Length: 389
Image (tube, rainbow, N blue to C red; front, side):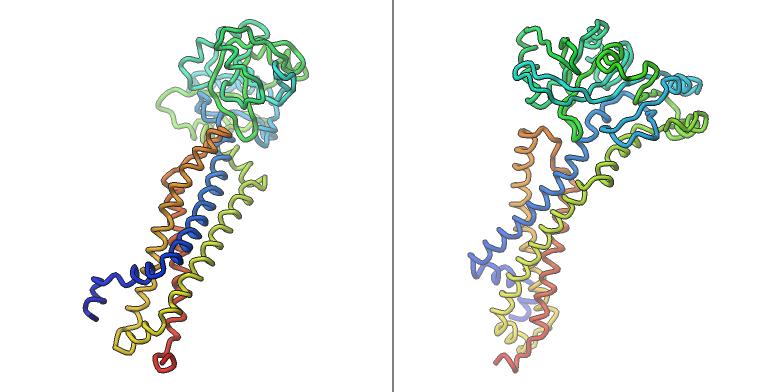
C-alpha cells in the first residue's frame, strides 16, 4: 500500500476531495466566483485603457506632435501649426497632417438632446487614419458644413447611421451650428468620448470660432521608410522650441493610457477589486482544505504511525490545492468569456480575453490555492498520532 501511495497510483488527493461532493461543489463555486471577479476587474481595467486609445491606434502616422501642456485626450492644448511645418525640414519626413481636436455639443436630431462628441478637424486631402476607404469619403468634406459620423458611436447620439443608410438626408446641430452628415466611418467610442465625427479644418473652425486659425492640437508626421522613429523624434525635438513635444506613435498611445492609469482612480479601483477577489478565494479555499485536513486527521495520523513520511502526506494536501485550482479555473474562464461578450455588445468597450490575462488569473488562482494549502498543512504538521488516539 505504501508503495502504491508513494507511486501515486492511488489518487488519494482526488478521493479526499470527492468524498464529500457538496463541499467540493461549494469550494469550486467559491474559487470560480473569485476567478470571475478577477477576470472582470482586470478585463474592465485593460478594456477601459484600450478604449481610451481607440482613435490613437487608427492614426496614419509615425510621430505625433502635441503641446507639453496637453494632459490627455480630454484636455488637449493647442500649439502653433508652424511647428508642424518646420518638421518638414528633416529629410526623413515624408508628410504631415495638422489636426484640430476638441469636444463639441451634438444635438440628437430625434430627441433634440445635446451630448458631447469628439470632433477631429483636418485637411480632407491629407491622410489621417489607416483606412483605405476613407479617402473616398473625405472628398465630401471639402463642402462647408459636412461631417463624417462614427457609426459605432453610442445610440444616445440618435439613429444617424440607420437614417443615412436608408438614404435620408441627416442634418443636425453641432455647437449650435447646422451640419449635414455626408458619410459614415467606424472608429468606436473611447473612455473619454462616447462618439466621434470627422470634418474639415474649415468647418471645425466655424463650429469652434474661438480656436485660433494658426493653432492645432495634434500634428501627425509620416516618415520615409528606412528611418528609425525614435532617432528622428529625438532629432526633431532638439531642433524645435520647447512649446511642442515629439512622440512616437507608441509613446502617444502610452501617453494617453498613463493618464488614465496614474492620474485617475480607475486603475486603483479595478486593481483593488481583483485583489479583493483573490482574498475572498484564499479564505474559501483555506476553509475547505483546513476542514478536510481536520476531518481526516485520524487517517493522516494512522499513515504517519505506519511510517509514511510527513512530506508525502503534505504532497497530498498540495495536490488537492492544484486540483481545486484547475477545476475552479475552467468554469471561471468560460463564464468570463461570456461576460466579456455581453459587455462588448452592451457598451462597445474592447473587453476581450487575451493570453496574458488568462495566464495571470490562472497563476493567481493557483497561488491562492497553494497558499491556502500551505496554511492548512500546519494542522497536519502539528498532528501527533499519540495525542489523536
